[in-house]
Each structure stands twice: as C-alpha cells, then as structure tokens.
Image (cartoon, rainbow, N blue to C red):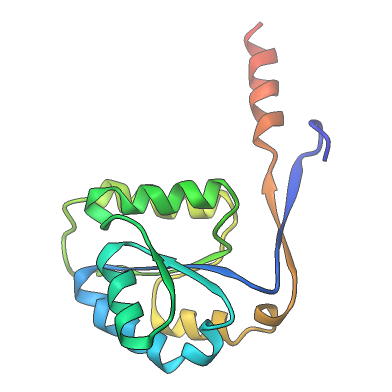
Length: 159
C-alpha cells in the first residue's frame, strides 16, 4: 500500500468478526435472531456491548466477547475495534421509536462504520441477507479512502 493510493483495501477473512449491538427495545429480537442462526454464528468471532453480549451468550451458549454497556462506552469500544480492523460487520438493532440518552454515541458508531465501509444491518431483514450472503463463506475485500493521503494533501494546501 502506498501513501499516494486513493483507496486502501481491507480484507474480511472467511471467519468474520461480528459486532452485535441492540438497544433495550430490540435486545430480545437480536437474541432470538442469534438463537435461530447459531449454527452459522458459531463459526465466527462474536463481540457485543454489555447486556446484549451477555444475553446472547446465556441463551445460545455462543462465546461473545462483551464490552461495556453502550451508554457507558461500549459503542466507542466497538467503534475503536472497527478502526483497528477487528470488526468485519455489525448487526446493530437500534430502536427508531425510542429516544436514546446516548444518541451521539450511536451516531458516532454508525458514522465510523460507514467511514470504514463496514457492512451494517440495522434490522433483521438486512441481518438475514448479510448472514446468508455468499460473502459469509469467502474472503471479501472492501475499499476505504486513504485518510493518510487525505491528511497529507490538506497539510500541503495549508502551506
């Protein structure tokens, strides 16, 4: 990879690193979905925010790496893992009908996922399409903008 390349390619391996996040009003839906799809999910690395990770693990027996609760920094922890290349896609069932006290954190997590061209499911239909995609069983290459180049170009313009 060169500093002057416009885009960088990130590889998503056959074993996916999947972030599982759900607001309180959507936790049961996500846990039920994970239980229904546990045969597929067991072949991948799972992580999630606090209570969601615990509930999925308790119900399904799947190992789920738990981070802090969303309002206590879990959204930022998942966002950091995205930046570090340690999350390949995310199922984030957010509740559009319920005000969230940590809404800026939610927006920041969704924003960073888009910046890093991360597949995101915000509802069960999209989660089903993603989980049953041909890309679940093969390597996939996603492209992100080369931010080092962008910063370098902006610095040159300021001179």
